Length: 157
Image (cartoon, rainbow, N blue to C red; front, side, top):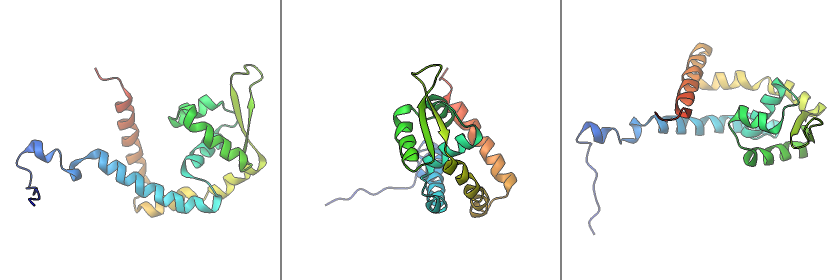
């Protein structure tokens, strides 16, 4: 049986297809590592990373609509609704129809959800420590990632 062998890239075009040359792979593998770190840090809070993101949004501004939370997190309601239901089952938030427009659902933190914020205050410093980067380096990286995201979301000319 002949097994194909792969040779080193012959050209710049071939180099462009090398896994280690891919920005997307660097982002993907970093996201996996970051999610693993958050999974460990969030386990005592009994939150998944997406649930933590929802809580971050609500700790910043309580009483948002489901669509406003989704817009903030770049999530559609089909993805967000199960997260919100689970957080409600855990006693961290309540969902209720808006008085002004019953088609909209507003989300409010419960006392338990508000209290969880104090426990979560220790998570960002632990992430910074695990990253082995300075706070300044992380802020620069965050700004570059936001610029990349925003560029990728723009329509192709």
